[in-house]
Image 1 (cartoon, rainbow, N blue to C red):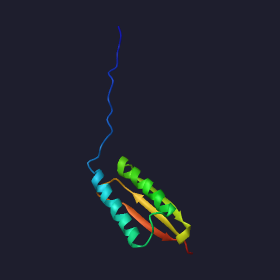
Image 2 (image 1 turned 90 degrees about the horizontal axis):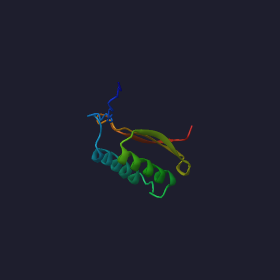
Image 3 (image 1 turned 30 degrees about the horizontal axis):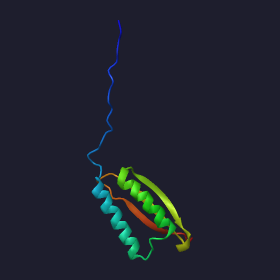
Image 4 (image 1 turned 45 degrees about the vertical axis):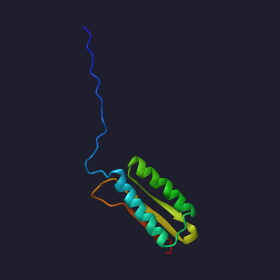
Length: 98
């Protein structure tokens, strides 16, 4: 007698508290707008790297945190990009002065 197991299709759990793509886009656009207002050019290496990170966050919706040094401005770009709809992503420019 053969015993066969039924295959289970495991679907990834999607929380109802996740941001949709348009919500992620709005947050990132707001952050880049503020950086432009502060006078940081788009050609800055740290800004280029941050754009790549935010593009992945927008497309995949995977939360990510990190720090990107900006030695030309004596700053560090710190970010917490969250996909939880009840929390706002955080982007901060921290001074390197001690």
